[in-house]
Length: 479
Image 1 (cartoon, rainbow, N blue to C red):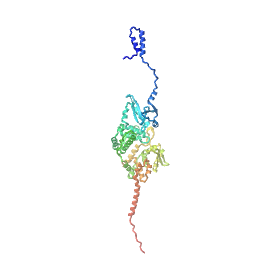
Image 2: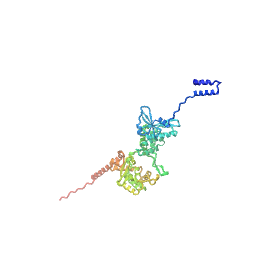
Image 3: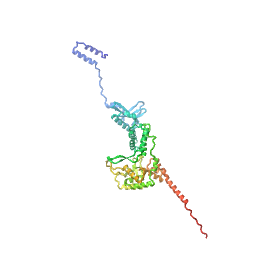
Image 4: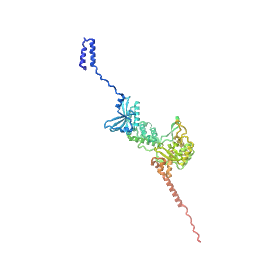
């Protein structure tokens, strides 16, 4: 189909004339080009690249909890507000609420990938930035993060998120997470929603019956973890399961998981029974005291005696600092960062404890009451290691012929004797630094001992009076 206009057609017909000269043909060809060449509009200068990008990305703010909460929700549709710190992170605003998303260009697959991180009420801005940066790094490494979104968070990621939020309030959060991951093994990389009660029960049973205690021995390059003791750690198994149960409960409240696989797994350790029997008295106390007095490590002897005389936790006694001890007022002050409950605590020092501390003060050369025997990192003398205390404890218990006793049972011994001597529940709670009365109440059965002793003395006196020989009376001689 001919698409030339009439003027061009006329020029073409004229060019067919063989009588045209060369000059005439050139003039006609120039006219033909003028008729057939489209008119090009003038070019406009391009917009700066930054302006184009900003217009495409929309609003930008520094995402904080306050800023996110102040963003108005649209009546319909959705709107994105981008983070000024992490460019790929945005808050997606919908009538139903606010959520964090990551949008990354996947060069390997030549497509845009969007990953939803969670609702703004469940994820903090810092957590969202950290997840966004991990997603960007994963895409750069060639991973398809859309598959990761389909299976949800792994158990390791769940533990990381729990520690990030709870670390400030739970003093042992990092330690609990490390132990949880250690026993989980490869299950830590599985989606958290795929973990079953059977998985938890199998690991819990293995810890309770076959695992052995792991301690770190040596220093520097020679430091290594070794297993000691008999197989089976039921108390550790219960603590491991309780940690995961708490993490899953936290995740369930945030909508990250729908079920808690730790529910229904029974305890392996009789905590109540152990709390009532694991303390020193009678012959066991005499044997332990004699073996402790004969042990060659004088520093550990003092540390164990302070555990008994103060009733405090092992970690607090090992890291006791001279700056916290007032030998004149006979008190030991612990600030909130040093206690399990994150509350400041003041412990009175009995005469026996003051005598030990006064003797050690004469030769003190470090800030620690119980320093290590040698320097570690950066040539700094630290506090006595738990490994050293455990080794000495094993020697003392073996020499005393006592089995199943732990260093923490010295704290139980203090609480038990407080109850035996008639101290009230409130006094025991204050002396041992328990957070709740329920912790001090586990020694309440021993409060009957003073009553029993008094009743025994009454019974002995009544029996002695009732069974003593009758005096023979003689009549006076009559005058």
